[in-house]
Length: 73
Image 1 (cartoon, rainbow, N blue to C red):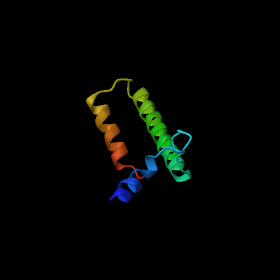
Image 2 (image 1 turned 90 degrees about the horizontal axis):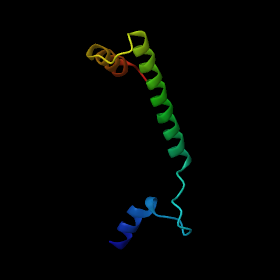
Image 3 (image 1 turned 60 degrees about the horizontal axis):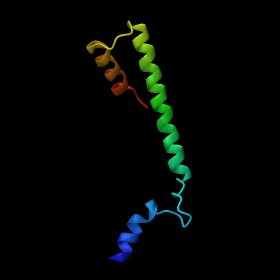
Image 4 (image 1 turned 90 degrees about the vertical axis):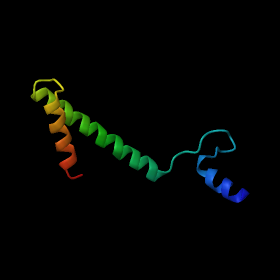
């Protein structure tokens, strides 16, 4: 039972120096992709709002939702 709790807590364990473990390459790559996609979505929403009058109305919100839910990533 002690092994199980040690194995489960290993990814969150700190190195002997007291610093948190550095995320792996795959984690950093995935995070960069997510941040990039969020930034791109924010730009698209800003562009749409600027072209449609600059106000967040119910109609604008509905159109934005439809654009992002129907788009293929």
